[in-house]
Image (tube, rainbow, N blue to C red; front, side, top):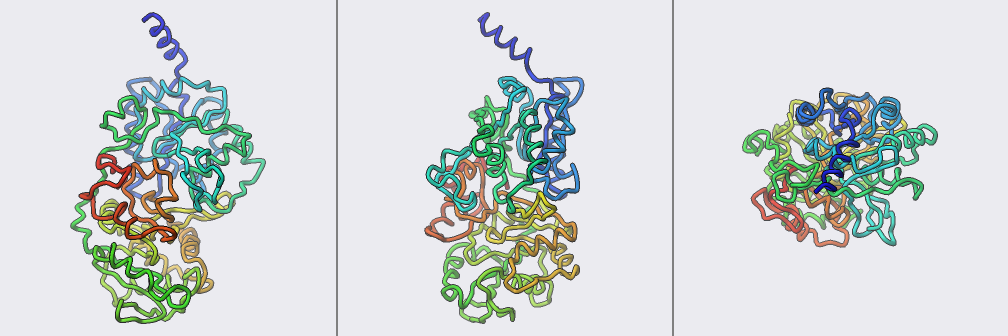
Length: 469
C-alpha cells in the first residue's frame, strides 16, 4: 500500500500542469462544425476549472489562420513551435466528437518524459496494401501504425519543434493529401529517423457510457447529433448519377447494381450519359462522355440542377456509377447542415496544400452541394478548362477562388471497405464506399450500408457506437 501511495504521489508530482497542454480541436469552417467545436471547447474549459486556476489553451483549428492547408497539420507546425515551444509540453489534437476526461488524460501524459520526442495515439494498421496509402509497406502492411484521430493524438513539444524546423528547411514533397492520419504518421516516422507511434490504451474510441470506457481518457459520444427531424428532409435531396457511359465502359453495366441497392431510397434520381436510353432511363446532357475527368458533364449537371427541368430541392448529390451509398444515412447527416449556406460536403482531399493549393471533395465517395453552393459556383463564371478535366479538382479550385470551404465527413469513402483499417470503420456508420474492383458490390452494400439506423450493425459495428451521424 505504501508503494502504491508513493507511486501515486510521484505521478501527481510530475503530472503536467494543464497550462503546459495545448488542445487543438480539428474544427471546420462550417456553422454546424463550429457549434460542435465550441461545445467541445466549453467542456474542456469547464473540466479545467476544477483542476487549475488558469485554464489551458484550447484552439479551434479552422480559426488559427486563413491558410487553407492548416487542416493538413504539417504546414501549421512552425506556428505551433513558435507560439508554444517555450512554455508548453504537449500538443493534443482531437476531433469535434472526441470526449476528453481531463484528469485521466493528465495522468496518461505524466507517464511520458516531456523532454523527449513522443508521438502518442490509438494505433491503426492496414490489413492489406491499399491504394489510399499508395500501397505503402506492400510486403507487410500491418507493420506501420498510424493514429485514429477520433481517439485524440498527442505530440511532445520537443518533437513539434524538430518537425517545425524540418518543415521550414525542407519543403513538403507530397502534392496530394489523401488520408491525413497516415500521411502525418509517415512524415513523423521519416523512414525510421523519427519516432514510431506509441500506442496509448487510454486513448479510446469506445462509446462514453460503455463499460470498456471506464479507464479511457478519451471516448466518443454515444448519441448521434440528429439536428432536425429527417422527415423534413425526405424530399430535399436530388440525386444524380454521373457516369453510366457508352464507349469506355460496358454499356450501363453498373446500373443494375444501383437498382438492386440504393435506387429505391432515392426520391429524385437521374442517370446521365451521352446516349439517351429510355429503358434505364438516361438523359443526354449534350456533353460527350470522356474516359476520365467528366468535368464538362458535371458542370452540365450543376446547370440542370438550377433549371426548371428538375424539382426545386435543397441538396444535390453527384455520385459515380460505381459508388455505393446509404440515402437514409445521408439524410440524417444533412439534417445538421443549413442548405441556405454554401455547403460542399464529402471526403476531403487536398492538392498542394503546403504551397497555397486547395481542398476538394473526392468524387468517388459522393459530392454533396447545397443549392446556395451551386448558385455561387455557377454565378462565379468558373468553368472547366476541358470536358475531360478532373471534375472534383476543378470544383475545388473554383471553391478556393470563391473562399468557400470544403466540409469533410469521414463517413464518405473514396475506396472499398477493404482499403480502410478495421478499427477505423468499427466506430463509424458509413455513408458511402466506391469501386467494385474484386468485390461483390451488392454484398458490400448489404453488409455496410443497407437500411437506416434500424439495421443490424455489420461485423465490427455496434449500435451504441454509431456516433458520427
